[in-house]
Length: 169
Image (cartoon, rainbow, N blue to C red; front, side, top):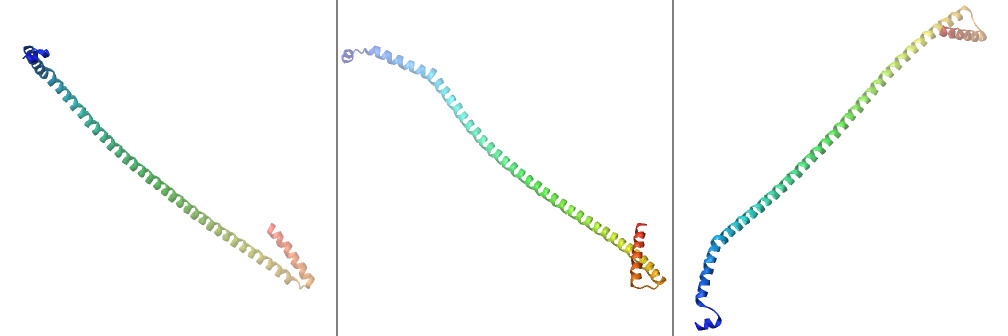
């Protein structure tokens, strides 16, 4: 024991300090270490849960974004289809209007031609009637007298003058 004494170590005091250290260590382990470790484990679990929730939220956000992009793409396709259908319908309406206008023009032309033909026929009939009247008048004059060439020409001129009077009258 002397060797320990030379070093400045007192054995009963060392044993008392070791017992005190053991008791203090035991008390600290039971009263501080366990509750602190439990709090640290709980905090670690909460952090872990928060991280898992964050990952879930990120995944949900990514899924929602992908769904949103799909919906936008679908809406874009539908909009494009609507535009194509509207364009096609407009083209069909324009074509139908063109055809209707063409048909109407053809009908108007046919009516105009018919009216022109009718008026021409009326004029021709009128001219024939007047010509017949002039012919009858000229024949009557010729029968009245026998003519030489000069008298014949005078008779024709006279009949033409009278027929001009008939038209005016």
